[in-house]
View: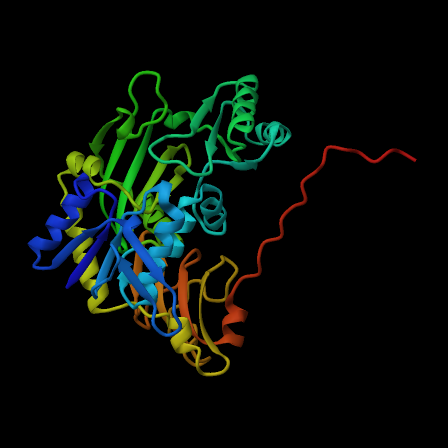
Length: 393
């Protein structure tokens, strides 16, 4: 294959490792500076220019898009996609993951734990946010990497001062998050490639520093992830649409709490801590994806009117609980179970005698009218009390 690595620095550790891994597996690979591209948008003939010349054909591209060039970098990746080139991480996924607020909003619809988060755009918003998350609190810029733009505020006065400084300077909007005290100064980075975690490390901050990033002097050590942490990392990456991601999690009292899903994770720290050939795993994943490309099964299978694909969690009250697929009579109702996800395990093409349990996630294809009857109704949210009482008559 011909593989392009989109990177601003050919001598950066991650770029060098990916290039070496691709060459070791017999691929032709080039490192292309993302900011040297020209984009020609023409009907029926999308084209990219590199250093003024029409770009040669590539089979795959590995985007290494830095935070400072997100907009243009995503435009370049999008043009590769329009030209039919496989991109390890798609442009929309990079864009979503780079926006901290948007990524949290996307994760919030799924069974993913994360710290209580409130968006704030002025001093009054911060005051309300602090009331919601409590103290101490963490204030984060919406865009930032390697711990930059993240401040731990021990008290309300400090939080208000930080917000005033941000507003008077760059007019920055921020996220206010509850501080997870039991995880102070440490977190877990899981490197997800495809549908599995290939390596994981625990990062520990030095001294009084609460940010554990290796770039800020934190120590890193290999760690064997619990199944719940592995499932959370893979699920978070898949929700974002990323095939290659670094998922950062805090070790909360009630399980993993996702704090970031990085679409351009560095390899130096995690390869050094674990000894795992992460770059080789990335190239292997590209080989699999290019050889057997993914298809949108919802688009392919819903061509028949009234049929489609859906995924839902089996509620304890469901008629399916403790029945085998055969006993559920789903096939007789024109529904096929494509897979069952249980805890951290996915069972593809389950056998007819497989028992369905409460909490299972079923991926099914069939009649939409039947599928709708199987999906549990959304839980009604309790109205939040304002704290005001009606005056007595």
